[in-house]
Length: 273
Ligand code: CA
Image (cartoon, rainbow, N blue to C red; front, side, top):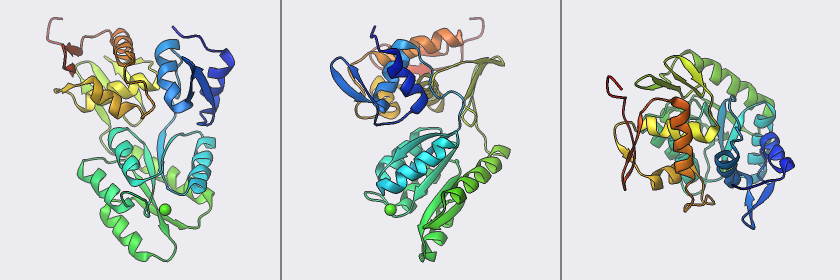
């Protein structure tokens, strides 16, 4: 069990800023790496109710401005600075909407968007295009963009367009995953068992959501760590087991099986158990 100064995690829970660091086993961890540890060991629930957005923008200033504006507007915001990172996050996380720049290093925005759509990802995507590049807009819509904003833009316009996209997507798009009596709504981030809501921390939620997206096949611990946490995450830790234990306890139905030496398998409980 680790002990943290109360103020440290208070800051983290409230501010969510990457520049805040905390000492853990004499290492200084950035917040995004510390979050899973905090949640696993201190049971501090973070970001339970907000809508989750992703900002993919390689310009650091613009990325920060967007992230700050969206965070101030009450969203939980993840950020990526190149196409590969953005593609990976958008492919593995249940975002409610994504702001995607077109000109990105490593993988351009159009390719990122096409790859998401090919993979069945339906979240609304707002693309950021260069002012004079009408071809960006055409390509963007063809690739599956829901809306665009041309640079330079007013942050207010981005916020308004995001609100509109979220409103529209709230009306449709299949967002519920079920396994036996367990239901997980990827849009609202709510989990329930036989209709009764279950409170989860964001990391518990993400882990369960990942298992539910891949229900019926064995998911290894390595895969979970790779999909749910960033590079700074302590891969030797037994944090995944801690999370799974907590999720089992909260759900109180037997849907997560441990497959010895391989990982976890999500299956509906057999009748009579
Ligand atoms: Ca760019």
